[in-house]
Length: 407
Length: 70
Image 1 (cartoon, each protein chain N blue to C red):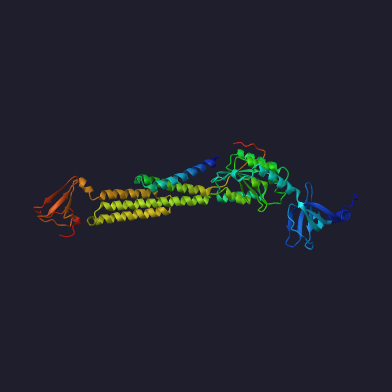
Image 2: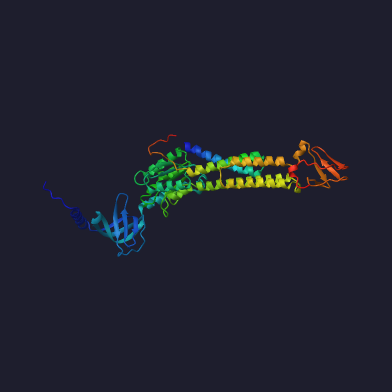
């Protein structure tokens, strides 16, 4: 082999010479896309038509009489040049003037008008999104950031949502058809709501969302569709037909998780608190009932004992209220004890065993009261009361020697 | 789909919890019955909480050329 290889630079400079001298000055008609006004003041964009595209640059020093925008049809005057560092050829623009609206935009406007006339955009045919969806169908690119954004948002807000993901082409040839098919398939999967979308991009990147196939599929979907094409300023056809437009895929994920796990947890906590509060009321009204069983002074000790018991129950109830799920049987037992205690301390309970209550002058007598001959008393037994006069007081005999406090 | 049935259970549990709060609030039950559903309610609240806190996102994937089978 005697061939002498050339360096990349040598080849590139040969191409540069060929293009710059062979073509040189040009006047080109095309549509602007991907227009970037760099902070340096230079403008970078692409000129394109239906079949081809070419990069273009317009330095800061060149003056412009209008604000170029993506989709605008322009006539550019300049010089073809090669940028060796990136192996790119581009037009170095000297001047630029607008030339009506771009072809793509004309097509877009035409389709939009036709769909509008057919009622595709009518507000009254748009369905509300489900208030509490159980499942969502997502049609987007498998590799795009849009999918990750949506999944992480759903996972954070409401991980119980069933996600059915249909990997979908959202750019380039066949993307429109694939999106339409994805909508049909997600309809068959019986999800509650569908999101079609992708992250931002140039007008051409988003173009598949401007196709009639997508418009038809969204229109014919039995399930509400959210369009989430990450482009805040431009609306796509899909945005107009969709039941709801979200500005970004993340915003769409929020729309399908209107109730979050946190909301539910708060609701549960609220219910739990109100249940505990009601139970505390039940228990304290139990105390009141118990207290009403006993006659004030006559049974102070008994009341005290009940109070002590009641306090214990209160403590338990309060403690229980702050530590869910424990001590249920314990508190039940305590309350059962209290109820049993109340029953056994009921001042009238002994009457069942044959004892009687003695009353004089409207007061129930305690062990410390003394009777005198001639007193009129009332005797209450379980089933009858009687009034009697005391004729004789017999010598004292104590039935409760231990309790005797004085002679 | 196991998850779906679990979620229905969660919904049923939440519904029952609300019902219990309502029943207790109405105060028409005997003490015994009140205690019983109180206990039930506390258990449900805990179960729902655990379930929500442990939930993890599950994604089912439809392949593009796949006909749906379910």
